[in-house]
Image (cartoon, rainbow, N blue to C red; front, side, top):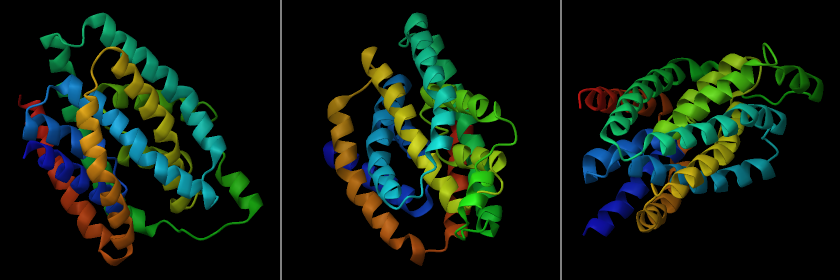
Length: 264
């Protein structure tokens, strides 16, 4: 029965990700902690690889559609991947199983969920106003220039630390950061860049967690068994469901989970 519950949880999260584009970590990690009583360090490590594998398929589809701006992905990864490695190394050095470390992770996760809730609500209110029209090569070259060359690396590093500690941040927070860094870039390309750069980040962070024993491989397989068809169905129905309403409700759920984690 528990195995079926894990598969159904994976399906639910995959379905919501397919509908809204919000990263699975903001939903899956709280479900694993509160719904199944899994330790935060194990929930985060398992969820990182869950996110890496689920978003890999999306990246392939987006790349085939030529929507991914690899220059943006590379610049963000220059900050996020080293930051992820350093964060996992710090967790290993501090002793990931220590109660004090677990407390830091749950507190950070609580704040990350509140940030994600705010970013999701912002996208619900403002995101639909962003144009998704195709632009010329010259306009695209100008739109992919950040406000300052160092800002994507800095933002990438901050998100890399956050994702490695909590598995949250590469979705709604990442999209919001990209909207601020590249305001002239169409929303469909912002989402594509966010999905693509999340793959190496979550993969590196997830493998780092695996090296310190904080990944439950059988659990990961069950979650993926549900999430892959869930994502497929969510993306199919995404154009037929009111995006603003779903994101607004989701932001309230994330805020609730965030406050609950901070109260632990």
